[in-house]
Length: 135
Image 1 (cartoon, helix red, strand yellow):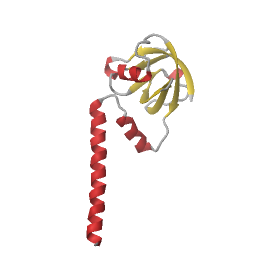
Image 2 (image 1 turned 180 degrees about the vertical axis):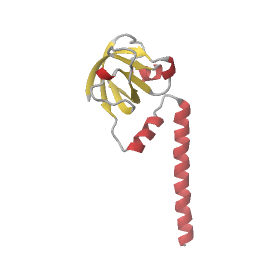
Image 3 (image 1 turned 90 degrees about the vertical axis):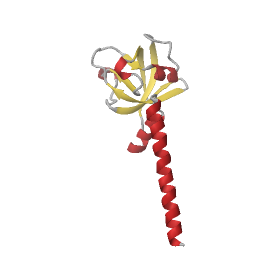
Image 4 (image 1 turned 45 degrees about the vertical axis):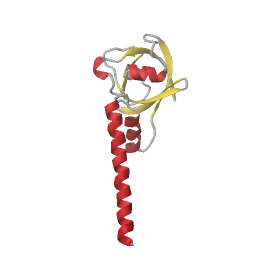
C-alpha cells in the first residue's frame, strides 16, 4: 500500500457524488487512471475510481463531501494528510459490483441492489424449474 501525503481539496462540481477521486499523475506512483482504488485513512476506507488532475501540478487529492465524511476528513480542507492508497484487487466484474454497492450516489447503489436481487430470484426460479422437471 502506498502512503501518500496529499492536500485535501473539495471535488470539482462536475465530480460530486460520482465516486471519483482525482490525483495528479505525477503523485500517483504507478496507479493508473480509470482504475478502482482503496483509500485508507485511520480505521476508515472507501473504494473509489481514480482519475487524473491535469489542471494543477500539486499534491492535491480532490474528494467529494461523502468521501471526505467516510474517510473522517470532512473538516480538513487544504490540510496535508497521509492516505494509504492501493489498487483495489478482486475479480474484474465482482470488484465493480462492490464499487457500486458502496457508491456515494444512492441511485446507483439502489439499482445495483435491485439488480442483484433480481439475479438471485432468477437463479432461484431456475433451480425450482429444474427440480420440478426432474421429478
